[in-house]
Image (cartoon, rainbow, N blue to C red):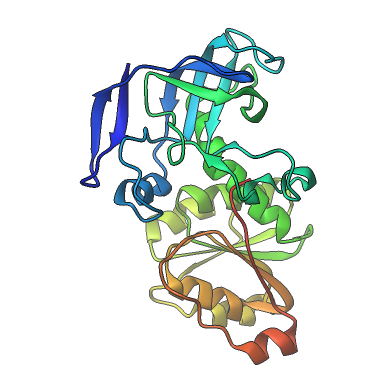
Length: 285
């Protein structure tokens, strides 16, 4: 089979690979599609450690072609996902409490094991999600990473109906976060980006307030017009967005960090303590 493989020179090469035999609890997929995530670029560049020879991809949808012993959740012909979270140990404090993405022995598709940018892929059946009938595979592929990541981020922000939530960064993650916040959590949404095109799209999908942080002071506008956001989700990969989010929320507000800029945040400890601001990280879904 053909696969998109990371090389030792930090490039991606299309190579021939042979799918290994299935182990207990695994299923083989014939891939239909696989999206490209910014994390794939990090993996290619060795930002999380060198992984030459690994097949990229964790936004994939494929059709089950075979199942190993012990598989009950999938059958041949089902469509299923290839997501970043490939497998946890199943017995640590994180795995038994619903926080398995934090498992210290976690395996990730397209990083520690081969992912979905290939003609075929192996998944652990109990961690793969069956795609509902009627949902387009290309649409489903974006949900396997960006979708679950932003849904979780908005959920743990503790936003309530009618409250204000600021979404920093309106790319692939941010536009989904906006839609979840508006259509699932019934919040009022502030969209912040440096691209007018992205902000115009944000208006079309329901943003109540849009701010171009390249030409406007986002935190000042948010404080003036809303009294401060009740929560903020930062999907942007810029330090400035994280710093702005802390200043944009009201007392008791929560900032949820999703994007992965290489820099450190600048935090005012008195601001956090005296105003009871919470800053939390959120990993995948």
